[in-house]
Length: 146
Image 1: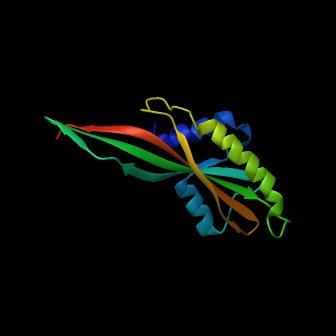
Image 2 (image 1 turned 60 degrees about the vertical axis):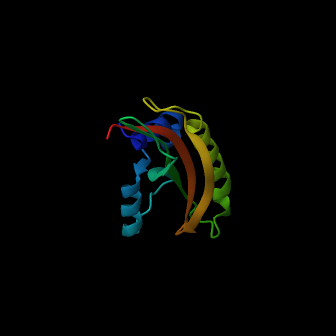
């Protein structure tokens, strides 16, 4: 199971209102390109953001390096009927809190360490929908025998 899969399962377990409404980056991209955003409330999309690498260390026959993998949970909240999106703010705040409580400090099965929250930011408002991103990181130890 990938880290994206693990986070998707964790969100579905800890935030029942999102169960069945959690997708991947490709699904969100397809919806946006089709101009067909999730209807009927709130959805979440888990998106890998890559990694940052620490300085490598080498021992005889072994390459070690700490990586910090990053991923985002993009919350999509509908606010139809509210021209400026102000009514979506309490729902976005509540969802942000639920996502933080579900993921931050949690150690996925087989992970080297727990997830840490990095930042949250409003990505924008479009066609009656608010997009809010919550970023997380998780450490990983890379060991390679060249």
